[in-house]
Image 1 (cartoon, rainbow, N blue to C red):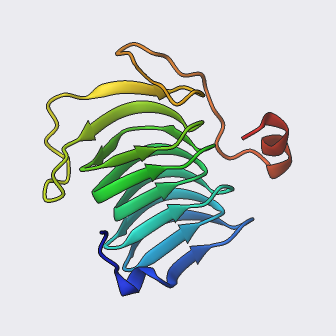
Image 2 (cartoon, rainbow, N blue to C red):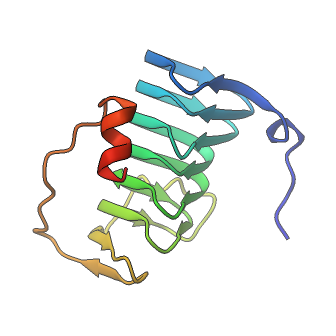
Length: 161
């Protein structure tokens, strides 16, 4: 059974829909991003990138949950969860990784299986694309097209992101 952290039961830091932030943030507890963020977040708790959130940079936390669009690296001391419908272009380093069906992922995974190891010393990295049927395809040369992360909400809704 998973341990409960009281500081992660209430949102400590929130970037709401329609908000834009550029910079670095160091926080404790639960952080939720539903707007546009460019920079770095370091947290001792959980980081949640909401379905409408867009993030370009580096996330580092105990648990990282991605539901929106992200370009950059993800570091976790416990686990990373990629929700259905998310888009991640970047690398993941974590002891555990959960990928829901219909998550779109392109990057390298360094999964150690040991919660005490942050996954920073990775020997066997693989590039992976999660297919719409839940399958995971690996390829060292898979190319990804150019994606604009900071488009207007109207353009994003029309494109299905």
